[in-house]
Length: 176
Image (cartoon, rainbow, N blue to C red):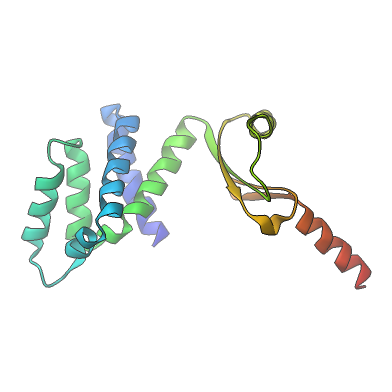
């Protein structure tokens, strides 16, 4: 389904570029995602084959026309028509990737055993920006299973500097 989501996102991205509205579209898509997240029954309504498509599309138009750009409303109507509204959040994630790539931005997920200080977060971000020659947005996660150190995931790469990984390596050497 990721390929389908990517295709929809690319089409929407092309329109956003023509309209010079990439950021405005992200804000609108995030607003819609929040509505869907807060109202799971709404999404269920939109995918229900027992409800006529015209009713489902009318509900989308009533909910979002005038609140988000018209092309976003048309995007929602298309997803609904094609029976793919459940892919909305995947489309949003793919769209965000396209915007980030166009603006030379990468997201780095930093997992640590304990909450990092702001100085530690800034230090990691600065080193990543220098190494990758991109602006970095960090998402920090606390996972006690890491034991110590950090695991950094960005652009499909993993830098595992965790104590757990080091102990695993020692175990493998001893086990030979």
